[in-house]
Amino acid sequence: MRRKKPRRASVPIQRIVRSYYNRDAKDYRSRFGKPAQHLELFARHLPPNARVLDAGCGPGVNLEWLRNQGHRVIGVDLSQKMLKTALRFNSGERVAQMDLQQLGFKNSRFDGIVAAFSLIHIPRENLSRALNEFSRVLTPKGIAHVSFQEGKGGERFVKRTSDPHSVYMNVLSRSQSQNALKNAGFEIVATFVRKPRRGEWPFDKRTWLVRKARRPTRTPRVKKTSKSLQ
Ligand SMILES: C[S@@+](CC[C@H](N)C(=O)[O-])C[C@H]1O[C@@H](n2cnc3c(N)ncnc32)[C@H](O)[C@@H]1O
Image (cartoon, rainbow, N blue to C red; front, side, top):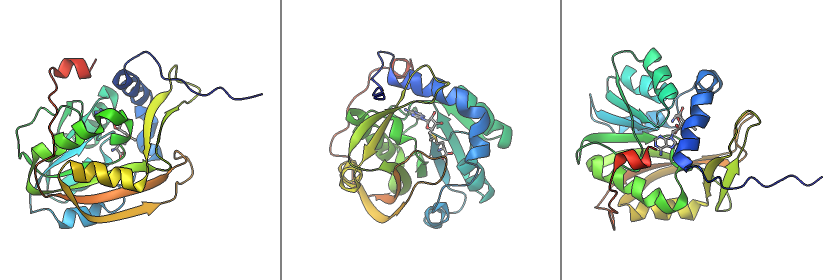
């Protein structure tokens, strides 16, 4: 029997992502409890006591690691349950429910941003919006650690049996993610790729360490946060 291809749902993508990770929040930290690869290298580029944004912080593993290095970290995520878990392990830290496509922070607020596999759920056509937001909230010369699923470029809808909807995922080729970062005003410091591990989605994992070099080519305007958080 042919397997049915998952189809784009009519429900907004962010809502599906949020409910997907709300369901997953309990187990996620036990399955993926290690800090992101190359986070140490990222941290070497930060000033002491840096202001860092964990963008799509999930259960707060990277947030915790960076906090233990003496940095002031704020975690944001779409999923309330992920944020709750993050707080359980990082009491006293600041977290907020926020869409990466519209960050509620002033310009140049952060010395560094970590976005470990969170941009993968942003629709392809909106990726530049989120990356431009990263660029906006970073200080000049601010540093970012960004990871993507890598493969032949494409958009996928992945499903677990317990979820009513398939969750959106963008899969980018190396040149696609590199160009997206460059267009948002970043210069490449380093990049790494590894094969998927057991239990992970079956795409190579690409991490970029990038530095803000100039203003983004174009900063699209978004009207209301509430809309993108629907
Ligand atoms: C694969 S998990 C990674 C979590 C965490 N960064 C880690 O490495 O453990 C992706 C996270 O990104 C969040 N996310 C996805 N799209 C988002 C968006 N548009 N705005 C904010 N968070 C988002 C999800 O809710 C989820 O917690």
